[in-house]
Length: 230
Image 1 (cartoon, rainbow, N blue to C red):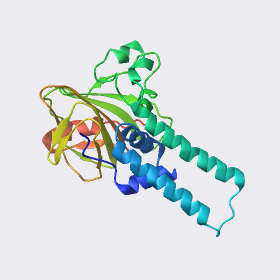
Image 2 (image 1 turned 180 degrees about the horizontal axis):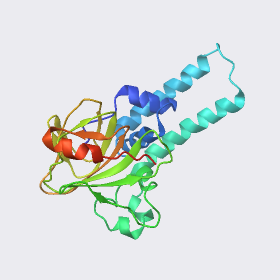
Image 3 (image 1 turned 180 degrees about the vertical axis):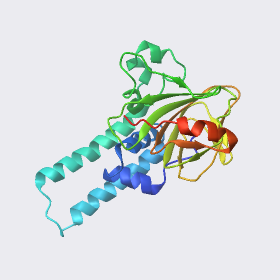
Image 4 (image 1 turned 60 degrees about the vertical axis):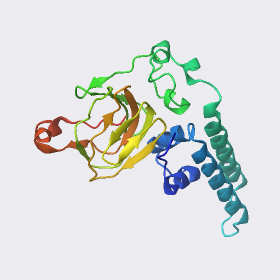
């Protein structure tokens, strides 16, 4: 059961088209798995359309209005289509045979390298990461794969981090996060994720700055932590 959702501010930005593309990808992925938030966005879209129809303060060119309404209709159809067909039907065999990747939301599947060569980098004994190309420069988008029972080193955030659990689950000081859950960490927030014992955990994260490992160990590794938007 999904218990952690984007707040209304994020959903409103997504509905209006003003959300940064990289963050919008994660919100869209959540919408493809969460009926509750899909319904909320549909309500926001209808509200936005009603406000536009009632507005007389600004002249809107017909073409611009048509484009806006097309985008709203496309958002509704894309987000509601997430439940209808298995993503694995369209994946490269390498991903389709991976129990963590084969059921990722369609918007995430589109970011996977078409040749099946997703490059994983080991960060620690418990954590591997794979950066994804999204065509933007402000944020880094990456998979985080935590081995079953594994603990990620405690770290601080130097900027915004938006995360969605794609498979499995993990916990930290604030709670337990299961498949589909969506969470936001801001600069200055410290946590230490730990995957559940029975299954590896796969997340996708959008960050605007590298994390900062806390404690003595951090003094050794922080100078080598990279940030590579793509």
